[in-house]
Length: 268
Ligand code: KIV
Image (cartoon, rainbow, N blue to C red; front, side, top):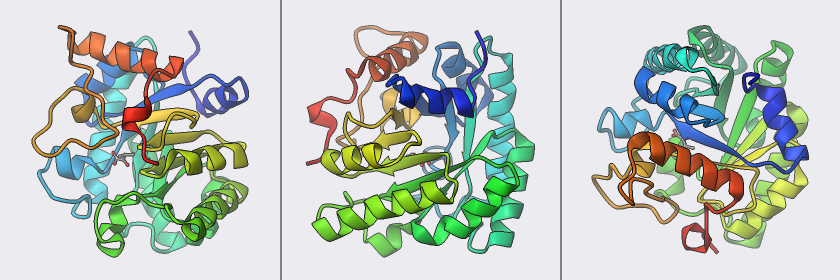
């Protein structure tokens, strides 16, 4: 089987074939997820919470993101079905185009195939320059955890008409600037559907309903490793006596078939 790459992921949107994304932070889980056929691994700055025990993603450094990307890339390379690796640029590492280029260099040289950055229209100049430099970009919109202090908590975004329209326009602007994938977190499912139809690039959802082109979950969440409140959009696949490998397989299968997410995981 040919390895997953940006073009194959983008081609899936045209063919209306959904794909599965899962966070990975270490070599073992990266290889297990890739072996299970998960198409894309996200080295998310959520590692600041689930690995490091912080109450937000803000303390994560660029060096830590590069370190975990190297770990994930090694495990992924050992898989016979390697996944596409996307890495978050951490908080305040891309406030200027120059800083963003340097941060992207660090994680791409560590083994990422794409960078993910959080924000709206202000990201357009950086995305254009990254595109010129050959760096694929995923633009993360909706609930952007690096802005939790500005947003006043981890809340569903785009519930009023004005904010919803602004989010659709931002997605179009960022795709026009060169974003190769859009990620939408915690938005009403109707709004996610609007964005997915408005852009030609794939849209990955988390807490964004069933109509996006792909889904992502934090691996700890889908393996039932919760220490606090469980978000509405999470599904635990470690049920029915499954092994970790079977749970990863079941998640990928349910995303591709459209069985996950169901109405109980959506926001109205
Ligand atoms: O850091 C992360 O894991 C993420 C996902 C929640 C989308 O950005």
